[in-house]
Length: 294
Length: 120
Length: 135
Image (cartoon, rainbow over all chains, first blue to last red; front, side, top):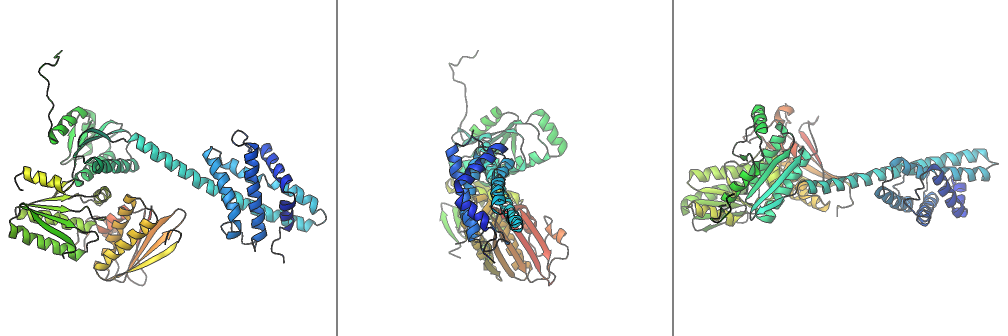
């Protein structure tokens, strides 16, 4: 029993490296996954070369093909090459099925060469085709998993960036902050709003924060709960929250829903909240005597 | 006891800094020591600095609330100061809002308010 | 160094009240080693504190396993006591439920602080609570 049943495949990978590489590129082109718009020929050749080398080294070193485990040591080179290729393609917006086809496009050129070499040994031919097919399917699967993990990371990063954009904490005056909420307020967003706000309280030594909900579309029981929790957390930090932008319609809804705001200060407009906030931190706004009264 | 928290009297205010990872018994002992000292020193204010506390669970939260109620019975106002953002969010999630205690950003903020109210 | 390990990385025995603080400290350290965000860590360690206190105060003591789960990386804690278990778990999980004079926000609160919360009576007696959270 040889260490690998894929000795012919291995020989092809080693001896016909350049030809195979070109054939693989051609198949990718035919399948429409070569993406010359994203990668130069030279770049593609280099990446595919690394993959082929990793594949060959893996087949050579893996002691048992039956327990195919790409996480094992012999496949480290292949994994590294795959991860690089996947990373770059995710960044450039390639789809998951394109990614799988990209890997599987290697089957055709390898099979063609196997048929030539093993013409006289049909049993061996079938064995190697089956084995290599299994190996490449596993590689495609691994690529896909890695692809999805990479994409999740990107989505998470974009979400965080958007969150920071959509919930800016603004300093209105010394010790006075505001956070204008816009759109919808679900649990995840509410938590991020709260976290942002509380960290800003520490950074700015804020004593009053105005949570303005003028731009919040719907205030239902859940949104009201989020707002009241935010106010409670602000108070625990030693600052005070004012919720502004409560329209008559929102006030009516809140009463109908039986929402009790308790001790939390609410104001119809951010203007009313601001004048309150000034008073709380010891300032007052007054009209200058010479002001134009127009 | 001495290691669990340090207690100083400044003006007529007891300043208490709680060390991190305080045990249940230690904080119960602190509660007892504080009630004794409020009476002995005639303190009108208590400021509990929890900035060092990485975690405040329901037990510690409850003791802090009890401390405030007890101090009020002995005519002293209690401020809990220095709570970390993550701790505040977690306590709210646990349904503990310490509604019986006053809060301030820091020791100096609390002292300013106690002075304003003529308690320091 | 736990950065690359998975499975149970530490066991803390919970016999005395002081062990609750040790459990918090140990879990907090593992969270740090895994690079947990501050809020995630505080929520998880607070939940551990509630569960550990329940074990010492009501379960007659026991132990707690800290484990690292992979893909994606998460932290888990399994807390097992040798007490009589809880006859009606759902009721015990309700906010405000109390047995030995605690205010009963403990276990119910802990459930809200973690991603996965499993609680069951063990066939051999005692209570098993499992907490898992992403970092």
